[in-house]
Length: 256
Image 1 (spheres, rainbow, N blue to C red):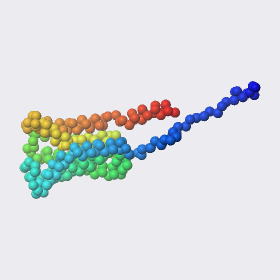
Image 2: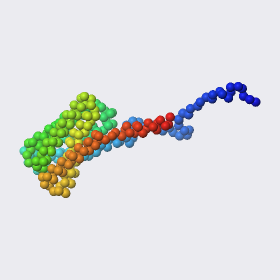
Image 3: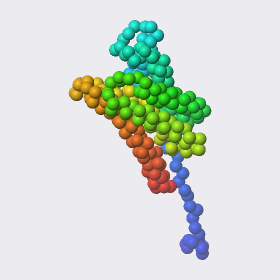
Image 4: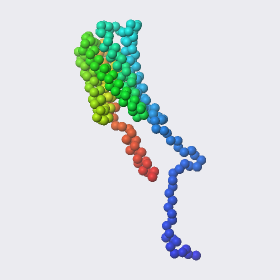
């Protein structure tokens, strides 16, 4: 028996497979934004910066206790005994800038609390300028600092560069230039926490080359050089997020 005319040419309805959970299995659990390994990694940089700042902060705290009349646990410094006020201002501002500024590097905190980021940023601008200007004052008016003329000139350069970076970073955010703001603030912070790196470079330099004026100048200066180099690497490195998105697009296209 032959089929009626036109029955063979009649198109069949097309069916589309819709992806869904396989019977007997649980659907994949969706990870909430800001949770998991990615969220934990956003706190690694602030934690590392806090650890880097511990040595100078502890040393500064011991010096403050000494100025307040407590036990003398650090080597005697006649310059501080003669004029302690600039040192106290510098230590307090530097500790605030180093510890509070470390949390500005948390991407999650900046995105979830933008008002906190802005308010803290204004406070850090003031504290950072106090650190830089007090460092200039101490360099110019505290004679006889270790390191000789070379380290004296480098201290002036570093303090001036830090102050200029803060001013440029502040003016950049005023005109909504976030990239420039980020770059200049990273540079300023890297110079500010140079004392943390110098705790290692100075120890290594003295162990290898002794305690001459030249070796002291070079070992202390190398701490700032290392921090500045790391800051430039952080500023200029390509972001990993666009690369991940680019790899994800072909995979999504192939699954359609």
